[in-house]
Structure formats: C-alpha cells, structure tokens
Image (cartoon, rainbow, N blue to C red):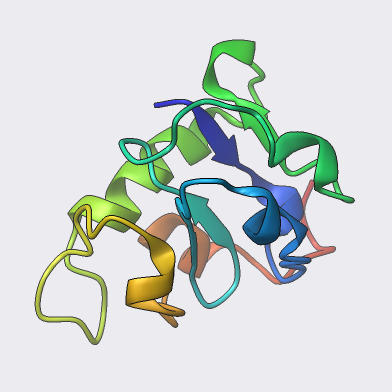
Length: 116
C-alpha cells in the first residue's frame, strides 16, 4: 500500500487528485475516492492537491487514517453491492468509471460533518 484517502473525502470528493495521478489509480465510489493499493506508484502527486487534506501515506501512522487502509483493500478485493465480481486490479480507473458504491466501512459511516 502507498497512499490512502481518509474521512475528509467522504461526501466531498473534490477530485483534484484524479487529474494529478500519473497512473490513474484513484477510483470513485459513491461517497469517497479510493487509491488502488497495488496500482499506486507512490509518487505522492495526489497528496498536495487535495484541498481537504484527505490523502496521506500509509507510512505516516496517523490513527485517523488507520481504518482506511483496510477499507481500500476491501473496496478492491471484495464483491461490492450491485457487482458480480470484485474490482480487482483493472489497470486504471478510467476503464472502470465511477463504481457508484463504497466499502462497507464507508457505507456505514454517518453523513459528512457528523463525525470527526
């Protein structure tokens, strides 16, 4: 894993990071964006352009981001509601388009602004 997207992205999804990612490894859920843990090349281009500081390196050991490490893995490796197969590693978000659903962790979180 390299970079992760945390709670500040939920219900905000500014999408500035999408244009900066040189390998197209940022996928769009219904409420949040997700960085593919295998496809990301750890360049860090996404982190400084996020206006809500929702992106961090998994090496930062920031406890606020800790649940989102497993969350990203689940998003790509589990069968999400309305899908037949896991997203897996399709080689880029543009070929997949918006997924339209989130991991269980994000789906169960209250609307943005009601948690910290």
